[in-house]
Length: 639
Image 1 (tube, rainbow, N blue to C red):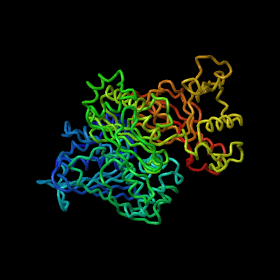
Image 2 (cartoon, one colour; image 1 turned 90 degrees about the vertical axis):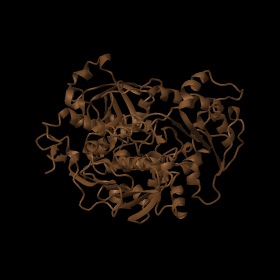
Image 3 (cartoon, rainbow, N blue to C red; image 1 turned 180 degrees about the vertical axis):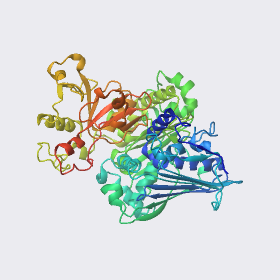
Image 4 (cartoon, rainbow, N blue to C red; image 1 turned 45 degrees about the vertical axis):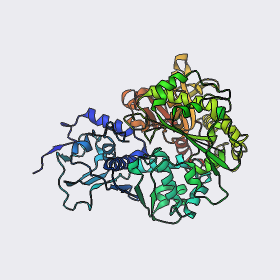
């Protein structure tokens, strides 16, 4: 008889561990829970296997919210503690995985989870159901046992490797949040996004069977662990094959993504490992298409000449190369150069810079240009805010990758060394001020801050709000629309709990108000005091404020209430949306809950919580039916 222990028995697994497990899961972005973590494990397994060509197979059944990922590497070891407790033997190997919590996060998010493995000496299989209910009340918490060693697989895999299959509960938001994140990252304007023709190019050229296949491949190659900015030798001959199954696209993925299925319900395609850059997507198109250049930037970026239909890609690796990116038109280096030489240059593996016209970058790169740091090829969530340089309109004219030799944090999305992050941000800012902005201006000519369609906003063609009770006729397209919508509702008496004391564009925060909380009496409004003033922020999508927090422009400690049209997606793993009912605010200080709040944005590191009032939900409550339309396709997020 196999010896077992009860994993979720309250006597052997403390409530404190359950709480820590929930916080760990909440720290992971939907794309990593749905596919990223298991894919990263497969990629790391192939890298450790070294020799020979390898295959990774991914099957995504969208109807069942089920994923299966199989590799042909060395096989997962028969050590249950690695699956349930984390840990591992990856330290110092510069792999994407570090502390072994990725599979645990997926397992405890799943309704069904199975792992099969075949090594040179062993083959096992393990299945588990309802692990996602691990933090239910003790009386109804699943009671299942885990072997101290996995039992042998009676029908082992055909070859060495690992197969992980997992399915999410129908009420889980993992799949819907993942699809929403893909749409917001790669198609910020929905079907009107400039990237849509590039997806069609991929299908017409025979690279991908449907536009959805091309979109998913591009998202994986731009925003997941498949996006290796420097491809290790062990992965250069690795083939990643993806199969998509979905009989009801409109019901499962929504109208925008369903349109991209191109009438197909099952299709298979291959995705090469590597970070998606403009040269790859341009190759799908028919002429005329932007022509590639590889001109090194001279002092101050003076060597480039203007082109109407091209893009310049250069790479910098040596110390002299990196200094070239900092040498201004007068031949001078910045004051920080000695610090860069001593502390930063030895850590930089390479800098890859692409300069092109704004329409080209937005047409051939999902979501447009980016500024990213990667750690030994693994893309992070760091996004340096460019504050130096006068010509900010040229920021959208370049895409840059800075790869460094550094360790990732617990969630594998940020660098551990924050001092290094500060130096990297300073380096990119100085490179932009000294060289890049001038090079971009010479290469693309005069760059307007906004594209033509953004300058001449067609208010008439924006989506209708479909609320005849309101004088606001269109779905909010910017922050001012959100403010106007809120105050029209307030004028109709829908928010009697608020008294406003001013809005400001000069202040760090948008507004101040006195708000009668749910357990307070009206005296707070009748006899106001300055101490009762609350800080209020407005956004189109609440998730956009996480970039303000990451840049430290604003602090979650200071914001009492965030008012947004809709929730959106947090762009930082440090900040996650949770239901008000699950929040510490509700549990520990219910007297501090603001009216009409149903969601909370939580800082997973500090524990601070920002309450979120969603106007889209309020409209549904105030004026049912019809429901409001989907997120505005032409909205410009305010981050």
